[in-house]
Image (cartoon, rainbow, N blue to C red; front, side, top):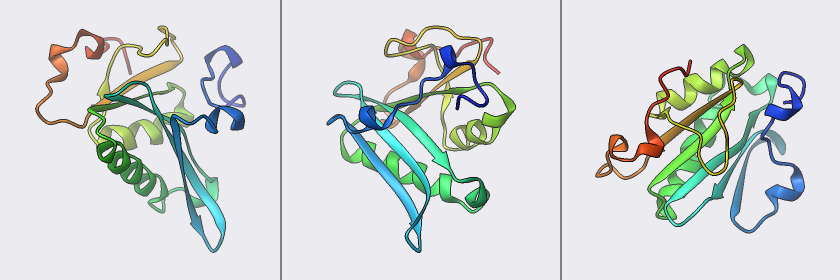
Length: 147
């Protein structure tokens, strides 16, 4: 991420942080080779954060990201989470990721869980509980200036 984003706007977790007990980690493999990964951090009883989603360049366009996202969202539902949010970049490099998240129903939201407004960040959230209306929670209001 440091190759495309200034250090102060990188929110990726390092390996030590990924080992925390509140974080689950999934890896997609083919013939023993890791093609992609994703993490889910439990923020509280109802809210999780998608972290560290990556797909190897040579595996892009093969559905690896879509499969990982589906797996982590299933796991979030199994854990009883009501919503999952994420932060990603605004740079063109992150456009495929934003398209993927939005194709799964993620919508723009305000910063959450200690994040601050950052012109290089996009914040997205997905309600996993169809009875919840994001418009009723001010922390989930769509950011009007988000790309």
